[in-house]
Image 1: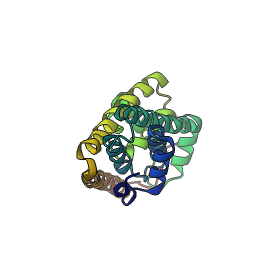
Image 2: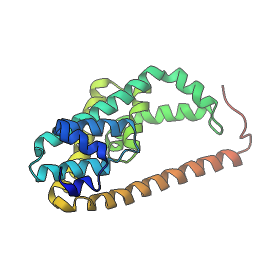
Image 3: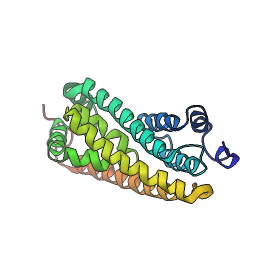
Image 4: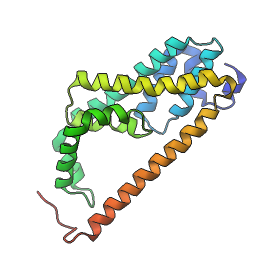
Length: 211
């Protein structure tokens, strides 16, 4: 591929695209779903740039990256379904500051908002992968899960592929914006966890658990 790409993108991403074309971009995104630290903010704009040079077809890139997102999410859904509620509760019950009642409230929240969580969660870094696990645990109907995941993934992927396609050799500019967005989301999540932990520690009888 173009030396400008090779100098800034992970080598394995280049190798997949060089060897398999647009399907290689799909494989890279599937792996990104399974291992969230992998850089989707690099893979998608890079694929868009490759499409702008004619090395890959734009429509093929959009279709294959969306298919890769769905495949990765489906694998995580399967993990949640196999793990099941009982094992999840057993594992969570061993964690500090967490009570069975918290899990029950989470289940109730997911029952009310699960569809929105899966759809919009596909557009939030890190959580876009993790949201598939509780969907599997709660056994969200598979057709609904696939529909919401496909729509949410298509929106996210299209935005960044087209950004890379439009920016051309300046495709890396996209990563700066996404990095700032990702950091803001993670900071908000850390704050939420700290607030939750503080509330648990300061609440009377914090050490007790409900069976």
